Amino acid sequence: MKSAQLSAIAWTLLRVVVGVVFVVHGWSKVTMIGDIAATFGNQYQLPIPAVLAWLVATVEFLGGLALTVGVYSRWAALLLGCVMLGAIKVHWGKFFYYAEGMEYDLVLLTICLVVGLNGGGPYSVDEMVLNKPPAKKTA
Image (cartoon, rainbow, N blue to C red):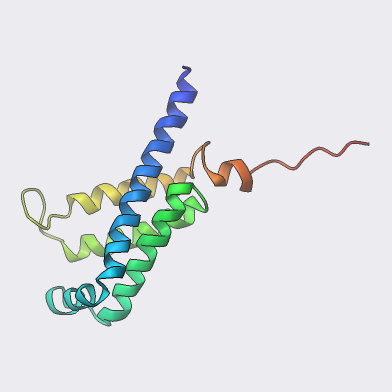
């Protein structure tokens, strides 16, 4: 295989795996939204915890789906990156070796930034459909 093909496969693998991680985390929040809202309000002292819980759950689930298939990857990554910034703020000061350390959130934020800057890659809906050059007209 050529280097460009391996790079495309690696990029796709990274995007899809991170997308699936967000889908799973988002879905778990959707199915336990009451508990998530309570945690946001009681443990993390966040304002409007029910609204934030639904917002985070929705962005993680739908943004994760978008990353998985590679549709609107830049926008999905931007929104997911914002969620990760919030998670880092919540876990600020806890790093390695803590049960709720922020390193996991930092890794996901970094991947979201990279996808946001570079797009979904060659094996994404973005590339195959949305960025497809217009067909040449025959005379």
